[in-house]
Amino acid sequence: MKTQSEIIEEIAQHLGVTAADIDLNASLKNDLGLGPIEISDLLQDLATKLQINFDPADTEELQTANDLVVMIEDLLLE
Image (cartoon, rainbow, N blue to C red; front, top):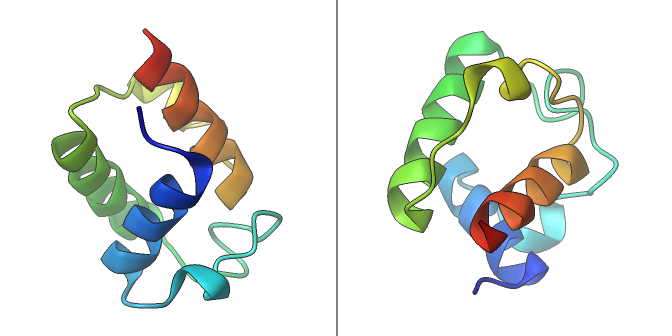
């Protein structure tokens, strides 16, 4: 199972930044500058790499990087 730091590394890799650049409290939209299309691309990339499936209804609630990490951790436990 992936650790929190490995999940952050996957997110950072997709965004083209270092893991140290990912603040868990950062807003996906305001701080990381991700619009709906960029968030969708990120989720598709993570789903493929981590072999998980995101529920679209749940992803609408994502606000911060931490929300995304927690969601992925939960999905990896299933």
